[in-house]
Image (tube, rainbow, N blue to C red; front, side, top):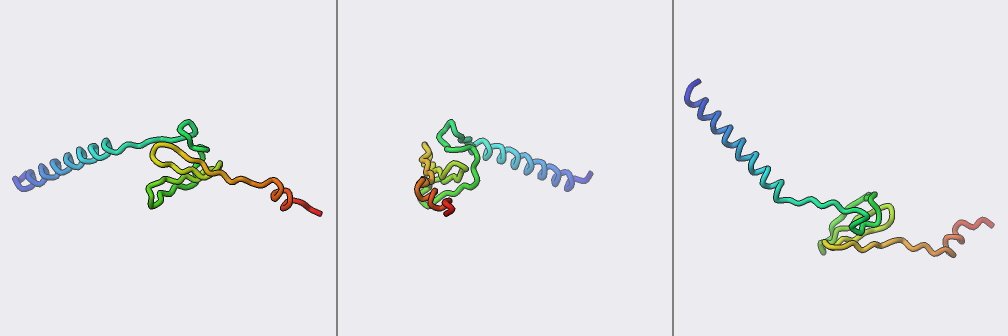
Amino acid sequence: MNPTKIAGLLRFIAIAFCFIFWAAYISAAQKIFQYGIGQGLSNNGVSCIYQDHNGFMWFGTFDGLNRFDGTRFTIFRNQLDAARLWGINRSD
């Protein structure tokens, strides 16, 4: 092997090691949290996620809409009025 090929190979190996160590550093710096019913989420079945301009995370679940402020969940559920519900389903 000539010296230019060896230098190119060593350069490639050095860049590959730098990339691997950089990727390991970045992945260790990011924390992933898992939230569920035990942490205040209304249901584990999440169908959509959205972050608004105030920084709140919104989770649409099968049991309502959940707003997460970074520390706790606030649950918003649809309250059905029984009288209106019976009125809609009534067959005369």
